[in-house]
Length: 320
Figure 1: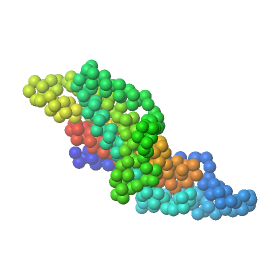
Figure 2: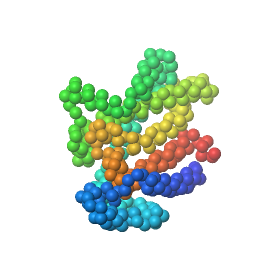
Figure 3: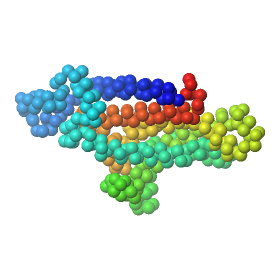
Figure 4: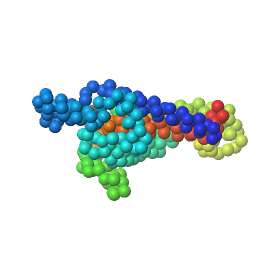
């Protein structure tokens, strides 16, 4: 097991290094120049004044240096937790991340938790009771979740809350440790909208995997030995059916940090998604690089955790 973990950790480092290179290069290929934007926003309308101001800003940002030197400086700062200074928000990028990242992570974790709470049990019930009314009901719910766009689900939730309950989530965001109830009142609805959307494929995947597994010989042997049906289904069948499900959940978990921008806009949650959109619009290189790097890091960490879960769910993987 230790050798398996070591191999995965060794693969993690070059993957992260490759991500930093891609992020840095792509940001330099994006049309537009933050120096020009800042110069003209400052009111430098005359050409001579504007060019001097642009040159000054490029020196301050280090954009006049060779690309390799810029990359090495940025990477060294990222290792120390220093992502530079946001010239658009007029503060260090690390302050933006410390403020926005916990909100997005809380929303993503709440979404995954809610989706898992009903998606996996519904998939198991649908497979065990195949072609029953429960199976048909679960399949209808799954198809409806797959058919409705994410933004439409969020808008419908807001509409029903306002139209029938005359209430809408608070617009002023409250930290969980400051006001847990108000924090939950704002985040539970976007989390439910996203959970309904991503639970549909998880339910269908769980159902299809369970249908394959419960027909295996070892499941029939477990029943022949007189084990309770619950133990056969959850202890033997479900554990072997979860490998593709875990993969899908890990993939969606990585996507959530980048994709929750829709829900953050609809429900007024000031998270990393909205901050990323604003930074891209204003060519704020340090902020964009830091947020994308952090999202990629979370995605890679999730994949590492998924690999370790594989070894726990199926011991044969440790020795391959």
